[in-house]
Amino acid sequence: MLFLCIVAHAAYSLIVIFILFGLIERLGFCAVSVSRWFRARECRDEPGPAKALPVPAPSVCVQLPMFNERAVATRSIAAACSLRWPHEAFEVQVLDDSTEPDVVAMVDAAAASWRARGVRCEVIRRAWRGGYKAGALEHGRKQTSAEFLALFDADFVPNDDFLLRTVPSFFGADGEPLEDLALVQGQWAHLNALDSLLTLSQSLSLDDHHSSQMVWRSAMIGFVNFTGTAGVWRAAAIERAGGWRAASLVEDCELSFRVLFAGYRTAFVEVPVPAELPASLAAYKAQQRRWTFGWAQLIRLHGAQLLFSYRCPVLKKVHLCYHMCLSVQWPLWMAWQLAVPWLAWYKLFFFKTDEPGLVYMAPILLHMTVSTLVACVALGRGYTTQLRQRTSAGAPVLVPLLLLRVVPAAIVAAGMLPHQCYAWVEGLLTTTEAEFETTPKSGAGGAPEPPTGDPTDHPTDGAKCAISGDAACHPYNGGVAAAGLAAQREARPRAQWQAERGPATAAGRFARVP
Image (cartoon, rainbow, N blue to C red; front, side, top):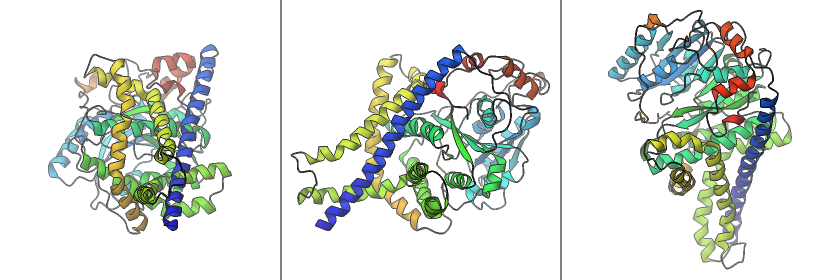
């Protein structure tokens, strides 16, 4: 029994350490946000020089990996082709590994319709689906000479200004490239968060991750992992790190750490990209298994290199180890949950009080409370539109709804514990390439209206396209002279174009341009 007591409390102690790191990130996010708020006020009083893109504009290739995405393929292609960027420096790659003939025909038709409107939209297929998503991205990367690669999963629907708000982060105020910056990760938003308790619970964990954790990591240690979508990569950084690999089911995070080891930094910007949350339990379990399985593989692949070979300040290395090992919490929680009944029966708890359970639960409850409050304050305003579509009650309903979503989130996490623990152990022990199971999508959130009218009525060259949008811009890819874009932005005070762009979220005013 003594051995059981020691092992169980060792697992609990490690859980508490993870909780402490999480609290540091969330309280650190609050400190960073307050600091940026004061700096934003100073910028309004004394606007600094605007950041300008170089002339000519850097080339961008938008990559859309997909596999039998019947419900969202057309919408995904439409959103990508509608991104505003100079026409001569813009292309779209539809990396389609579909095997169903009707889906193949659907993708071909959608791409052809956008090519007829003047957008360079190419469908790229492989004879063999080797490497799954990573293999498709690597295959597409080798067929473009673009300087930057923007990636979106099929269920993501970026706003047309996504590139205009992310690519400038790769350049300094003087337009000089920041060569050490490999990735700019955008923020996930949700198309169907209020559809069910399951989607509502998912929105909390993702909001927490894409507000407090990402902002703090970007600001303090200069590293965030790529989330597989809604981000822009410097193509040269991927090349230097060895390209995409299918060694882990989280190929995005695996590449992120290799890029880190190659000497690059990565950054997060609060530019929201709406996406569909898994609407069924089966879809959610498939997604979570892939993530947990992949992170366990990542520990096996790169844990030793991070711990012993990678050179960086001690505190940064400690946080990076915490970052890489977050999935270890699943087996720790499983061990603690299995031990609790025995500890209670034999009265082996360390804390000799009338209610030891409350003492042991205190750190967990504190973490849940802080995470929920931070996520609600940071991103709560983003749910206003969805709520208005369902009720006219407004804020009196929204605030308690967002706060109380911690209840279904806790229930779902507890129910998923055995599933996640098994996936983690399986990932740690699997040394061969594992099958990449795509998350099923339903097309929730609707699809944008397709462009109408004669494409020749909209200029694709020589028009000016401001950051805030211009009526003369090509509505399909923003068509147009980089000189005009840079000149218009440079001619306006920073405070003016920031006001025109407007905050995308409650925390948007604190968005950092590296």
